[in-house]
Length: 387
Image (tube, rainbow, N blue to C red; front, side):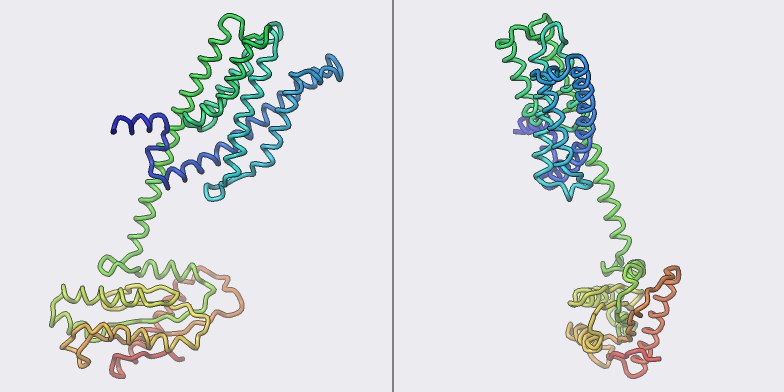
């Protein structure tokens, strides 16, 4: 079974990746393939157009009515249809089924036109160069797997084989020409497979690095103990929402020093984790961060600012409802005091973003002052900052 899997991976490099990653890799490479085939189409159409002009100058209008000229005109038209119809996908997310259909259809037609033109040429008119250059170009310039190459090449290769029997003057009857076709086709398939495997390895490695970077950035923004966002994340969140009305809460666990002295620091850590998870999972739009020690800062985004005070009170009650035993507190359980400030965005845009961190610190200072008042009034309560 392992040997069979290795063979499948060799024949189809995408099989080495799990389904979701494989799909993304296919779409990523399709973005490149679409652009690269456009280049081939433009160059091929330009060459064919030049040849048609030469045919016209040599034999007049009759030079454009031959089978070869008709095929070259069809090639140009097919290229134009492809370039216009396939679109310009700039990222894997926008790649649709239409891009795959246009790409594979155009690639197959490119080779088919080349083989048809080759098949109708007489011995005196040329060689197998047209087919050979196209099959090698597709194999080395596009990212195609073995099954894809076989499907794309098969129709054109079949045309060349049939031309040996049905076209007496076919250049494929010349000694060595058909051998060149077979050898070039085989080389193109091997080249395409090698390039695809190398590209997939490169993309997968790049994605791994990006995923690791993203994970590292995520961990940097987390508090090591409570696993909720930290102060660094608070600042970046605020800077990302400069035009949003919000309430900023400073939440402090009541008598936490007494809790540590009574139950020990390990139990104190568990208390912090429970409170942090309760705050971070409370249903509201915004962010809860551990600010330091037993203090948490929460930003609540709420369009209806009149609902802020009831919501803050509900948050306070949710902590008390955890019923975390605290014998060193007059309340018997862990409670919190909350100071909060409401910020309403002015109608005018804030243009100076350089002091945004200072503005945030000012909000935190105001919430802290309100928190101090809540503690002075007996703790286990909320207090709105007022000028």
